[in-house]
Image (cartoon, rainbow, N blue to C red; front, side, top):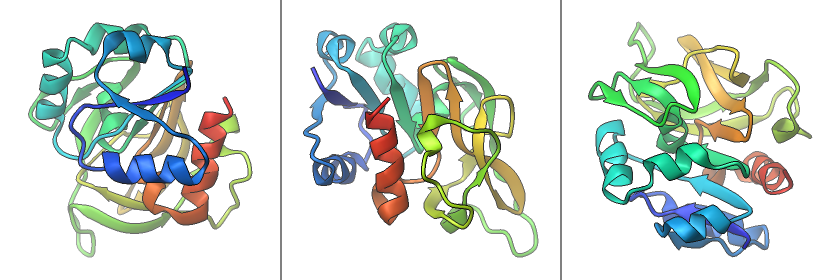
Length: 196
């Protein structure tokens, strides 16, 4: 089976499906454990809050399944944060496949939360997910919480403070920005994921 989008209630599911269709990929939208387990690639989209996002995954019986996947997995926006160990948002225990603790972005003079807009991606270590990324390439972000920089970071960005833009650990990957709204840069990174 090809790629699947986990139906975890994210409001970006429609735009993610359309972005994949533009790349020639028909990704089934599913919450069926057998379909997710059988997929070649699994994408966990998400827009919203960590607590309700994890509650939905628990209600669907998908938490242990997602933790046990061995094929390439991509979390997008909230989906990336749910891959982590914990989120400050609602003091939420998450999937724990990335040993990071998601933190609220700090407000400061000239820095507004939520962070919305285009930011440059800075590669912190080489990774196939970033193939073809140029030094000035930008992606579109909308979020109030972020994954701090750590050994899981393959690209970072800055809005006041620096935080992870792309993470990877084993077969688990995440993009804090919205690749489906990030033009050719987002399309390239999605293609790289689909080619893993």
